[in-house]
Image: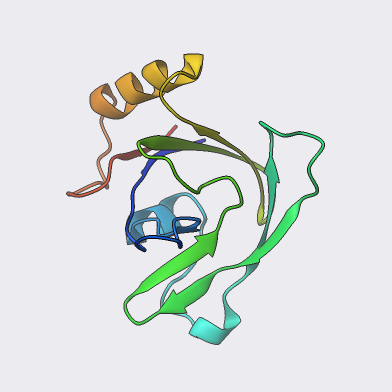
Length: 128
């Protein structure tokens, strides 16, 4: 499972373009970022807070110096926390939590208190 802060790294109107840190791509998604940027996989994402929604087919996209994936429910407002669970190769269920969601406070505590040896700075994230 991945738990990660959602930030405004892409700026206004593009908040759904999520930029996991490089170590998240490697540690959680098992994506070799040194391979050809044109050969990056497509991910199947299912929004479990809206279970009747259709699965999203989203490519991993390389932009200048980072990699992004569009996540349907990742738009504003902030703060927000993303939780993802792998269900098959390149297929993930996800939930986006915001203040007021019962899970938000617990996940915020996890991000503050669970050690992440591969996290060096920046956005909070943990792979459990």
